[in-house]
Amino acid sequence: MNIDYFDHRILTGVINKRKPLKSDVFTSFFRKRPPSAGELFELHVKSRNITMLPAITNTAPGTMRKSDIIEAGAVKAPRFRPKRAFSAADRFKMPAGVNPYSPLDDSMSRAIAEDMDLHREEIDFALEIMCQQAMVTGKITLYDMVEGAGAVPKFTVDYKRPLAHNIVLTGAAQWADSASDLLGHVDGWSLMLLEETGFAATDLLLGKNAWKAFRHHHDVEKYMDNRDINVGSLLPHVAKKIKGAWNGLTIWTVAGAYTDLDGSTKQYLDPDCVLLVAADAESVIEFGLPVDNDCAGPVEIFSKGFKQEDPSGYFTIAESRPLAWTKQPGWTVYAKVV
Image (spheres, rainbow, N blue to C red):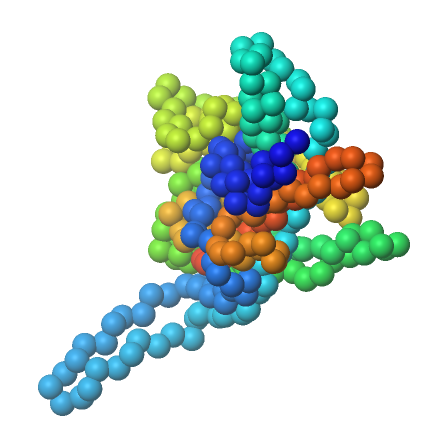
């Protein structure tokens, strides 16, 4: 097997050109930024108020606009570095349609693409969970794997979502009660987003129990529009989670769970809760520089391969350093409605 196939330049080019396999609901609310040449980000968090730009008079010099509502903190981008064995026998696998007179080249290209897709799937899933935590909890907890101790929390990036944006409805206010003012709740929360970020609500994400109460509520059933769902550039499996439009909002359903590094099972969105989002607020994904001597410059994902003599085999490694960043932490309202 030619080791040139595993040159880090080739593998890095392949993995970054492959389409994301698991770009999902929460990732779709963030905009990817160009990769950075550093690993440390100064996160600026903006909240409330827009200050007027002062005018320059004939008697006084112009002044720089100042604000006491911007907080900054330095955060090092986390590292995700999956490693995978690449079996030498894979080069002999020939699916239907492969040219039998060049089996090494065709099967090798296919195997490398599949290997890079598996790495990308793991990294994309980690990024989805990071975006989910930033939106649902307003903070991201990062772990280190320590031998003998398992997953140990390393640090938490707290984006300081206002406490008033965490809401619990009780009694007759819950959406399962026919007398509840569902429309009034959502309109009130949308105004909270507008006051905090300058942007109105655009999307409403619902857990499965919240969705059941929502779709049967009299404030919804007569006005829910699911005749023309514009999914834009969303992947098909993501678009299927969109249920329609209501009160100027795109309605999503979110269900399922994942196992966190600490071994606990966590819901993507609590079944009894909803998440109201102002998608026009500034939320981005930054990429730090991978920590590898062979990585020569900024890249979303770096990959390389290496050979092992005994037992004989090749291995591939991918590394990415993404960090989801909600620059306007008041862009979501999280409410328990059932």
